[in-house]
Image (cartoon, rainbow, N blue to C red):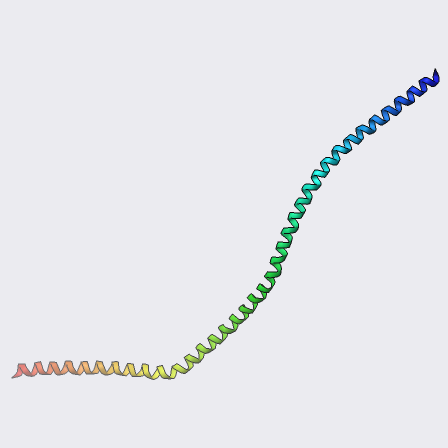
Length: 134
């Protein structure tokens, strides 16, 4: 009877052991399914991120030549601005001798017109004064 009891106890322990393992196995299976779904979601997100990364890298590759072109245009613009200022200075230097005498001539003409008006007024006044004396 002792042997039978021992065998029953051993069998009960084995059953308990296997039930615990089945329970653990079931929990692992649930976790596996959950992780499998999570892996699928993360993989999809990773794929999206890779696509976005490729797009950004492509834009960066195309932006670098644009930055170089912008730098070249800015340098050309600065050069043209310097040349523009130099040409303005040359024009000013070349036109000063031409405009200065003209300005002086205009001033002389203005003075002469004033003198002529003054003389004409005196002549008119003299005529009026001469008409009254007769």
